[in-house]
Amino acid sequence: MVQTFEAWITPIMIGGLILFMCFIIWDLAKKSKAGRFGTIMLFVVLGAGMLGYVLKVVITWLLEAQVI
Image 1 (cartoon, rainbow, N blue to C red):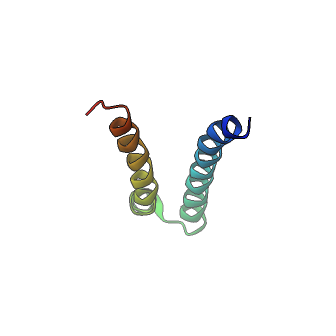
Image 2 (tube, rainbow, N blue to C red):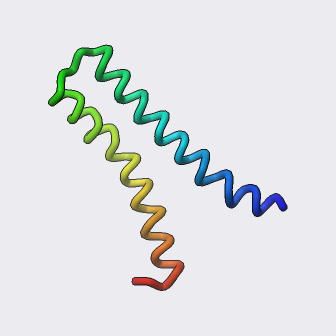
């Protein structure tokens, strides 16, 4: 039961955390009056860490499923 709960809640909570971090980046850009280019750069630079984590999860899943 605990393993099933953990298997479901972990991706949901991490997804929620990623969405919250996107909100924080957007709010930071808005409060600093970064403009369109500044906002894009904030999302690219600060979002790179989130993208790296998502890619790690996808690559791990592909390797475990023997797809590659």
